[in-house]
Length: 398
Image (cartoon, rainbow, N blue to C red; front, side, top):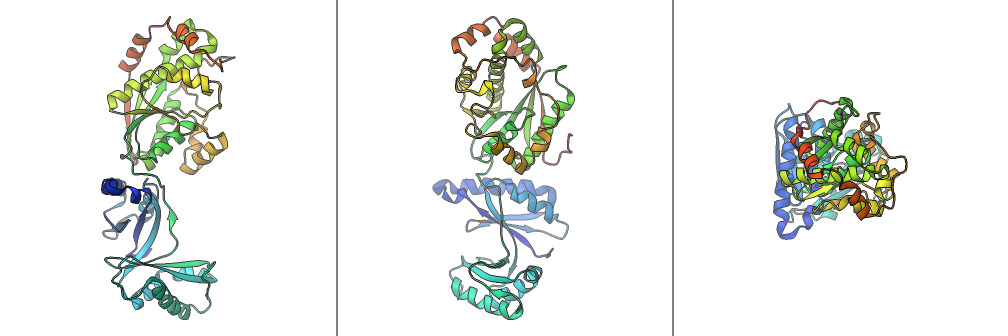
């Protein structure tokens, strides 16, 4: 690892924000700085649609910081680079040293230059030709191939210095967390809800989670599994609160008093009411669920209408048009899949009806639910609410 190595974080959608762009950049830099605190002292600043991350001293954990930068929403790509003087000679010497191993593994290369500093005496094509010619002499066994090279040497002439780097790696994309408002996500222990939470955080939404527990039907391991899913999401979303709400009494009342085919629908209506109450306390403006159209009986179009009937807040369903294969692919990519499939039941699987209604009539469900003390049950559940603050640096729960 070169001791002068820095990271160049390229911005994505943020550059399209016009008059609001500065507020997006400031939020993104704040998010990057917060994430890097765990890995040492770094200077973070922005110039010309790029965030520069410079380690201050030799004690920084560059590998940890590199991974963290790639997980910050709003960053479209990340490159490791070495700064040098803005001369052809300095650029060539830096490339020879910094990319020596890459040249040893390559059969062909090209130089791609970008001149953000328009006062530099060569244009981009001239700079690429000059640097490429000297590197071809320095590495005679590596052919020049401007079309399909094994190695591309990137040279950027910027305000403070020239920067030399190899290929960039993809960042998390999206928008900086905190720029899209705040929402409460219903987090179960399954595959879908962590993915839906991640997708909305990627649109800049700051998350709080609500999770329902039903002891003795659900175990402490099931709750720990959900807290671990939340911890895994903090790598992208930052620290968050997980609201834990007791749900046993509500489920038992539904089982005793309501038609079996409506068990799941009435249960989900209670969840939406409670999630909205949590959201109002948190200052959130929307709810997030992991529902996908037609995936299970409670997620048909009519069933979703019955569920949403009890809330006045927007219900965001980022998975609504996705199939299970797509959802699983994202879960694997973001690192939640292996935890989601651990065999601890959550309360959604308690008292599952044998023949759930797939085309429910809203008025019939309202009538079935009317025998319950809805307001009293919601108030009692909210009175039993506890919460856990989950941070990036927490130890694994499972």
